[in-house]
Image 1: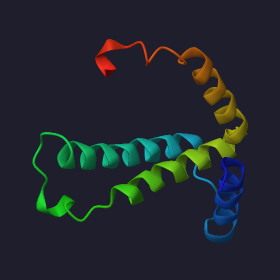
Image 2 (image 1 turned 60 degrees about the vertical axis):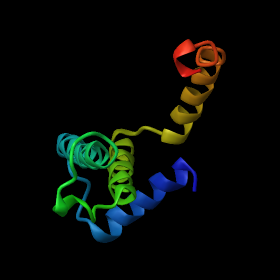
Image 3 (image 1 turned 45 degrees about the vertical axis):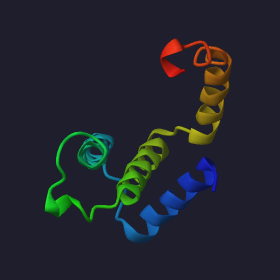
Image 4 (image 1 turned 180 degrees about the vertical axis):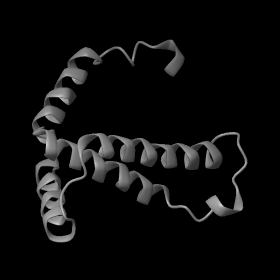
Length: 108
């Protein structure tokens, strides 16, 4: 699925199951909360913090999907075509970083 279709799917879901989009500020707070959940899993599962028993069944993929969902909501309600800007960003990064990482001694 491409980003354009993902945005359309989220919009259809909102119209079918939600009353409306939460306002942008609420969605920004929701995004922050979801990113925090991702950070908690990664810090405890892959970092040096111990994982609490209550966190062991948390699914990183589900939490990442929650982040993507809210990002798609924000894009829809602010008129951002994520497919276009993502494609442009990827092309920009490819040009800017073409040799940058290969020449980084820290990555060798």
